[in-house]
Image (tube, rainbow, N blue to C red; front, side, top):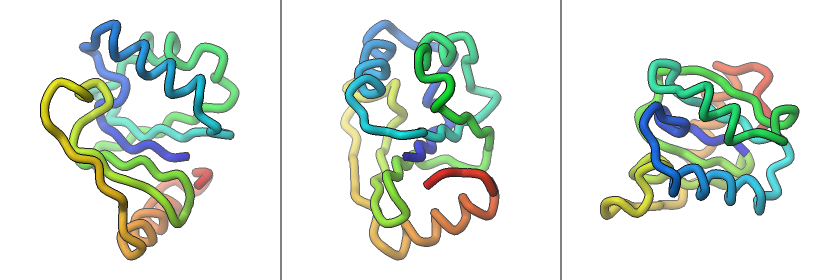
Length: 119
């Protein structure tokens, strides 16, 4: 699983976000999730708290090249969301499946940019 979201682990957050994120990690079947975030918006203290117990499994990558948010479960499946995880439920937003062409392009780009990424 790869999650691309510049603001996934934000400097400003509330307890609802923390609980949602912890819940997603606890019920997920992610073997080794990779998170791609923007370093300038990244909250390392919050990250340590959120992935407590998952440190050996979660890989963090930094990039400011992405604006859109993608959750990729395999090299053939994924979706894009119109808001960061910390914005879920605050405003109307969309979640859309990524079509085959787009997922192939995105996976190729990720493997080129991050040679050790697990997709």
